[in-house]
Each structure stands twice: as C-alpha cells, then as structure tokens.
Length: 126
Image 1 (cartoon, one colour):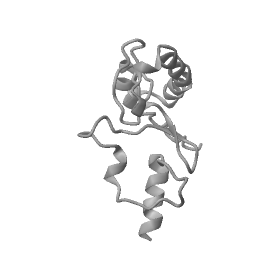
Image 2: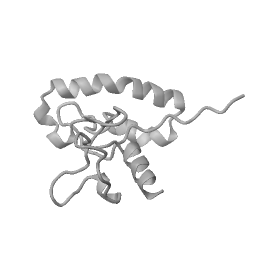
Image 3: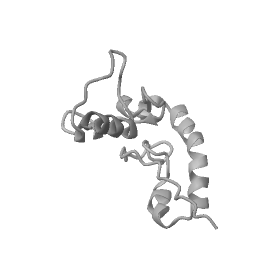
Image 4: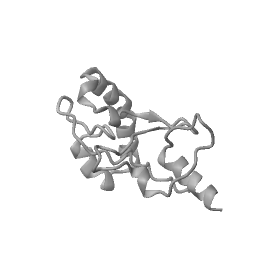
C-alpha cells in the first residue's frame, strides 16, 4: 500500500473575507473549511479544492471591485501558476520581500510565484 501525499492547502496568505460571497479572497475557502483543513481527510480536501474555481468565478461575478487589484491572481512568468501579491499597502509588503533580491533574467520577467522565487534564489546562491 502506497502512502498518498497530503492535499496541499490553497492558502496564499491573503486572508480577507469577501463580503458578498463569504469566502476568502486569497484561497476561496469558507471560514469553516479553513478552520477544519488541518483535520480534514485528503478526500475532503480534494473536494474543497475542486470547488474553488467555481467560487473564484462567483467572486469575480460579484464585481472585481470586491477584490482589490493587488489581490487579483497573477500568473507566474516562469511556470504559469496563479498566485497573489501579498502587498496591501506601503506598510504591508509582499511575501516576496522576505527573499533576497534577484536580478530578472531578462526585461520581460515579472513577478514569480513562491515556488519559482525560491528556486531562483537557490540557483543564484549556488
């Protein structure tokens, strides 16, 4: 019997509840789902994750003004994964500021997702 890997949390550390849909604007889970994530089975987690794209559409349909521009999903320049900038204002910087600065590979490089940012920092440090 092979061990199945845990279903990863969709949390991107943008923890703000959308007033219209009552789901988190970062991960699109309900408060109950977020609270129960640690004790949920992989099947329960997979079912929640399967529902998230529909919820993202509901939030978008409720008006993009409900989601601040800096929280709208971006696409990673390298891998294409969706992620969100953590910057809320000048006093709350993005999660990426916890990494050392890296030079872009070329003029077209924009923001990187957390995984690609970590890989870029590791490759520059080697």
